[in-house]
Amino acid sequence: MFCILLFFPLGYLARLMDTLLIQFNEQLSRKAVMAAERGDARGVSGKHLMGIMISFAATVLFIFIFLYAGALLAAWVFPLLPQFFMKALNLCYFFCHCSVLPWP
Image (cartoon, rainbow, N blue to C red):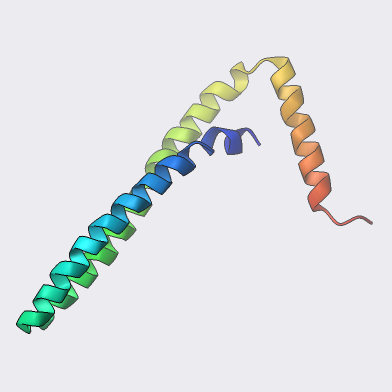
């Protein structure tokens, strides 16, 4: 539960990254259309592959960079949390865990 709360703000950063990737891919699409009008098949395929590779690389880097930094931060901050926060996390885990499991 603590890590979910820790990583929650990164959703907004991921949305910004997706918006930037969409804008970049739109530019690549325009360039691919211009290459197609010239009859340049290699240019079209190159633009498509570049868009896929950049989207993949940006997503993988985003995940690994923030996952590594977040794991280090969580390992450093978690033992420093006050007792009332630990109790609140325990209660959150208990209620979330019980609400997911089927009732016997």
